[in-house]
Image 1: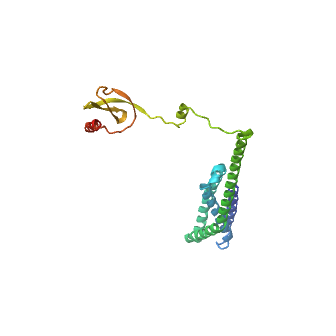
Image 2: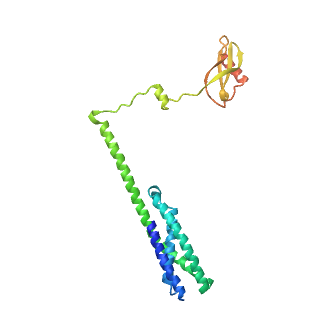
Image 3: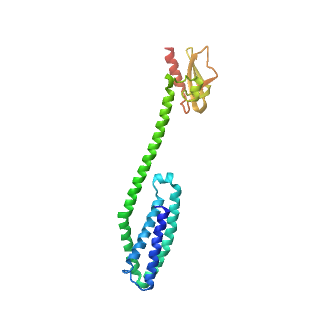
Length: 253
């Protein structure tokens, strides 16, 4: 519901409320003013429905009509405050002229009017909004899809003009590294931690950053190097001397 429709509903409510006040002033009973009361309640129901719509707008409206939704929400809020004042005055009039039970009857009547309008007017409005939003989304998809097809068609014609055939460019190793095709391992410095000799062989245990461990076997005449660059393997388990000895025995067999 747009701000103009809310203003029209408030106009109906104000005219009906003025007629109700005049009726109370001249001593008319509720039955004689049922038409004016019904129009006022219908307008109140319309404003409440407009406020609900403004608080929960459709997705298309959020994306493309945010300004109109905010304007409608402010108009509905101002109208609701004005109607609350009228409701209070109406309650005072009824309590003074017909007793407290009259206002309760009025609330029951208002509930019936709201239910009737929900089943007739508001459901139809909701259906029209859903159909309109569906058409708008379909139109948007067709426009965007048509634009994509147009761009693709132009590119295709340009790519195949004069027998041109696209050939992918061969990338260098550094370019492949830069675009992520080749992922280099993270390296660290592994330093000699322990060594064990057995029958001409030597087992070397190295440790690097973040508990990276490496195990290598060399001829005893070559020995273990002090350090070397190794692949980072964090949270590793340090090889035990027993494992080293067992490995050396298997090598010596």
